[in-house]
Image (cartoon, rainbow, N blue to C red):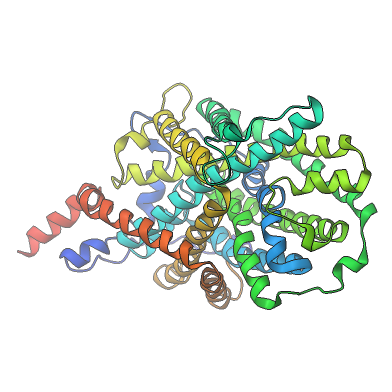
Amino acid sequence: MLDHGAPPDHRTQAAPPPPGPVAGLMRRKPVERLVAEGGQGEGGALRRSLGLWQLTMISIGATLGTGIFVVLGEAVPKAGPAVTLSFVIAGLTALFSALSYAELAGAIPVAGSSYSYAYATMGELVAWVCGWCLVLEYGVSVAAVAVGWGEYLNELLDGTLGVTIPAALSAPPGDGGVFNLPALVVVLLAMAFLLGGARESARANTVMVVVKIAALVMFCAIGVQGFRSGNYENFMPLGMTGVSAAAATLFFSYIGFDAASTAGEEAKNAQRDLPRAIMLSLVIVTALYVLVAAVAVGARPWRSFNDSEAALAQIMRDVTGQTFWGTLLAFCAVVAIASVVLTVLYGQTRVLFAMSRDGLVPKVFSRVHPRTGAPRANTLIVSLFCGVLAAAVPLGQLADATSIGTLFAFALVNVAVVVLRRTRPQMSRTFRVPLSPFLPVLGFAFCVWMMGSLSAITWVVFGVWMAVGLVFYFLYGYRRSRLAPQAASAASEVK
C-alpha cells in the first residue's frame, strides 16, 4: 500500500555494538549514508535518467521470457499439466518477496538491491552473504539464459536458411557440444549496449520487451487452436512433490523483477517509481506465464515435452503444420531472451558497483566512465565472465543454482523489512507491505520451502559457492570495508 503521510525520520541508526571481532561482522551502514552516497563511484557518478516506464520495462525485460521460452520444457516433465499450478506457487512466492522489495526500494533507493537493504538492517556479514547470493543469482542466470538463446537461434536459422550451427559450437560440454558460441555472442551484444549507458540500454530493452509480449500473445492466439481438454485429465500425475519441484525450478523465471531495484541510483524519482515498477511488472509477468503454460500443455500432451529449450516454437509448428509460425516465434524468442540477458547483466553490474563502493570487492567495479556514466570496467569483466560460463556449463545445472541463490536473497529481504520496521518505525516509506509482519514472514517461509525442494547437488554447489564467498570476505572485504576504519577507531577508544 502506498504511504505518503509518514513523517520523516531524521534519527540516525542505532549505535553499533561494542567493538570486537564479532561486532565487526555486525557493523551496519546507516540508511542516510547509503542514500547520500547514491550514484557516486570512482571518478564519476551514475546518471539519473530512468522514469517509471523504463524501470517497469527493465523489470519485465529481466523476467519475462526466461521461464516460458527456456525452462518450460524442463518443468513440465516434473509436474505434468499441474505446471500451471507450479507457476502460480512460484509467482506467489515472488509476490510476497516483491512486496518487501517494494517497501525497501522506496525507503532505500540505492543500486545494491537486497545487498544494501541487508547492510542497513542486519550488518555487514549478512549483507556480504546476500550480495554474494546476488552475484550467483544475476551472473549465473545471465549465462543460463544465454544458453537457451542459442537453441532458439538454431530454430530461427533452420526455418529461414535451412542451416544450423553445428552441435560442437552451439552446446556446452555435457550437452553434446564443445563450446556454446551463440551464448557467448549474446552476452557480448548485451555488453555493447550497456557500455553505451543506462538510457541507451533502456531504450533497446523497451523495444525488445514489446516484441516478446507480442510473441507470447501470438503464441496463445495460435496455440489455443490446438487445445485438447484431454491433456488435462490427469492434472497432477506426479503429486504435490512434482508440483513443488517444478515450482522451485520455475522460480528461476521470476528472478528478474528485482532488477528494477538495482536501478535505484539511476531513477529520476526512485522512491515513487521503484515500488510501482516492481509490482506492476510482477503482475504482468505472472499473468502471461500462467496463460502461456496453460495453452502449451493444452496443445501438447505433457509426456511429449522434453528438455528442449525451444519448446514453444515446436508447439507452434505442431499446431499449424507450418514452419512459418514456429520460425516467427523463434525470431521473437531470440529478441526476448536477448533482453533478459541485457537487463540481468545490468543488475549484476550495479550490485557489484555498490559492493565495490563499500570496499567489499575491488574498486575497479565502481569506476564510472565520465562520458557514458556507466561502470565500464565492471561491465567488461562481468560480461566476459558470464559469457565464458554460458559457453561452458549446461543450462539445467545453471538454472537450479540460480534459483537457490535467488531464494536465499529473497528470504533475507523479507527479514530486512521486519527488522527495519522495528528499528526505524517512523522512517518515511512510499510503500508499506500490508499485514506486516505476517506477509514478510510468509514470504520467508515460502522461500525456505522452495529451497528445500531443490536437489542435493544444487545444495552442494550452493554450499561451495558460499564457502568461497566467506573466504574472500575474510581475506579481503572484512579489512578493506569502508566501515573498517570506524570500527578500528571505536576499538582504540575503548582500549
